[in-house]
Length: 178
Image 1 (cartoon, helix red, strand yellow):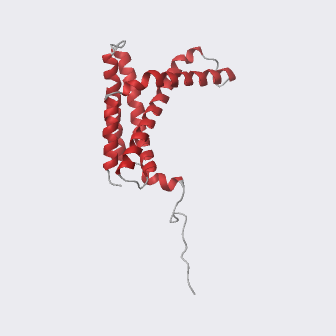
Image 2 (image 1 turned 45 degrees about the horizontal axis):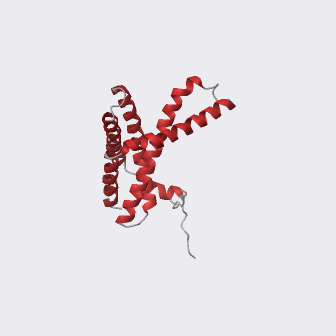
């Protein structure tokens, strides 16, 4: 007579997204230091571009740099996790390509959302009562307009310093032990 062991819910191996996501997440140290580095690099890239263009006032340059820093800080752990999932068990080239793609998409995407929310906050004074049908249209079109504006005018602030930082972080990620 054989006895089958009783497996509790906590001991049962997980499958699906949770099982793939947990090992993909960066450690707290990597997430914190990476977010700080990434925020500094992206905000410096934006500030240097704005200073080079002779853009408005120092206060406005700082405001834009803060949006870029906040977007990059939130995007780093997301980009790290996405890169790990996309790269899977691939080799160095696969990890490099995954990091390049995922850090780009996450950084531009999260920063674009932060820009759109800041943009929407500015126009909130002229919008209808919150959560009304008109307000929903105004919100959707204001955010969509802001995202287009960010894609057209904001993405250029990542060049050339942000692009160099992207190459550096992608190489760093690809070289890390799996």
